[in-house]
Image (cartoon, rainbow, N blue to C red; front, side, top):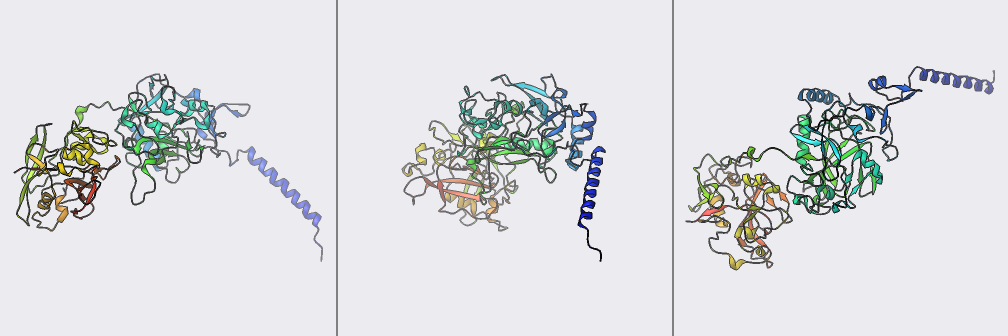
Length: 586
């Protein structure tokens, strides 16, 4: 038997290695490198010299339009994207969001790897005609774009005059703490800085800082220039709907054509979001450049109390756009972020719609078809109210009672007490006066009682009168527990119970009683607003005599989701803000 020749095997192995090497060289010569990621359309139009592409490199992208080739508009007018082209782009993008994306090599998103040697204008869509605006505070000019009925900045805000704006000190950063990078990607702001928590520009965002409860009055100018404001959560939703036609929106439709590590966008509307990254306040580091963008909203984060995943006083809504997940889901997300984080800011122009377009709420909508209602007008402000006669099926007693909530007084900010005893004050849900028009005002107990504001924090039982008028018009008095008992025990032919007290219009009721309760929600003890269209609460003109601090009063509470009746012993802090119903004096 012939022995195995090891030296001959080595010779065969060497020949095989040479063949593999020759095959690899041949593949490269034929352009078969599977690692190349150059977009065909762009590579065919780029000129080369000495074998090197002359295209500008933004981020990790090796084939992008140069900044000098981007079409710039000299017009100061903001033009909107045509609806036909938007629909076409939307259809193609929604079917496959990555069809029009430029490829790019995969790099990490560290500060050093992303190319900052570009201009801010490099990220704009050359097919879009932009308008422009100038910030009078520092003379910086920004491109703008009309999307639907909104006019947005198409570039990130870069205002940071901390000498004039004290609230920015320590609350604004350039990525990597390099000032030159702000010229490319704008500045990163904490929520307090974005909201102008010191109230230097206006008072609507005053006090809205990290770790503080905040319910701002919209629109909040924040750090934005005059005539512009920080978009609320709902305004971000409006943008999303305008672009996608619904709530769902691919990130790609809003992100820029260049600069993204994983997938560039189609930027069909010219929003041109660039991956500016953010500063993580917990980890104390910059992160996400080339891969993500975060934009602050003016809305504090609301959450499911049963989950309580985050603390609203520490979190606010932001619009998150990313490129790393677009191939799977890729929805532009309104999510929560720590107020202490540093995110980008985009401003939206103040509405130019005149107030005359507002249509007052039709207060007949919640009423019951079974009852004959009358109306009277409160001479103090000219507001008319529906009322009816309620009769108890148990006692036979009748009362004449308002079928809607009282709405009188000057609106005050939700975070403040109603402590001006010289005038009537009211809260409007979410600090929006149109909510008062629909649901009535919300009042602290002392305000409802028209007693000194100190009575919210100490006992004033000796000042309570029989048939206490309080905030009600002349000839009317405040709603009592006995009145509730009369209204509750209506002739309930269908065994509707509490459901019969609630309106069938938006409050999940049958309104068999005629009382026509609506979901006014309430103002909480620290100034927040809760449960609009989900519940209604009202104070009775009685203190809780079982407490010795004088800070609690009896109240009624009815929810749209349960048939639980109010408890006679239920009370709450007087500083809450509840609805008011009045009863006509006999």
